[in-house]
Length: 360
Image (tube, rainbow, N blue to C red; front, side):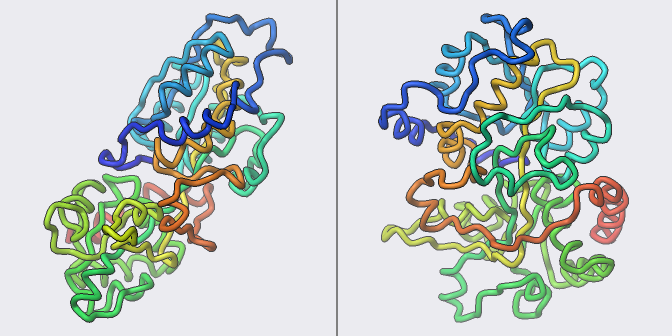
């Protein structure tokens, strides 16, 4: 899942709060032992292959390194799609020990290609099982975070114009909302691909007809999220003219008025949930260190830091959220979904058809 560039600001607020509670060590992180003990030597590097949006507070990573004796090396490999392609191409000679950031739209391909070695953390927090891949059930890939791609609206714009706020995908093709919607394209953007999948989930084989009507109603396509949200969206800061945009369920927590209310809202009936996973690479040079890193990503400290460091929701139940998130970042209760194996089998064909429809 590629987070927007503008949302990748580094912060340690949540970490500081966690450490102020007297957490002297990283809860839930195994520090050794098991079948890999003979291969686990302090001072060895643990190489994490991930996407460009991976960010955790430096203090938190440094604490993990002190407690485990390992040095974390991060190798970024583009977005989730690029990451998956690289993993498959290098599966016989992996470029790292552990992966973070492969999501539910690409995971089936990597599993089928034998990219990962089996590993399930011994003490998975409550709630993590909700995000397991159906065919894997946590045996190989461990859920770490989730976020939903949703249509967002500028509620102040609609109030000023006296126009009802749209609530569904069907509304976006109605004449009342002509020329008001902007979305990143499915072929050039991870959230854009998620939106295409949302329409496939909603309309089934009739999704091409929906896209024909959507484009016919003046929907604008951009290359990426930043262009759509920061340039064209009326609440994006760029004096845009479109009050409907594709973004995330967490986005309203970042558009606050002086009184603390949000000036935007996510349309929760339009959302497609993305889940990011971590896994130990088959053939890893440091499998024991890799397992420790997977454990680390599920620790209470990392889970609490995710909203403000990577702008995603934790998977561990009862993880405290920042105040603005708790008030304004509302998650969908029944997000649209497409089975991972179905995505893997049809992604290329869907993208070809989508490109044909949107470039006529």
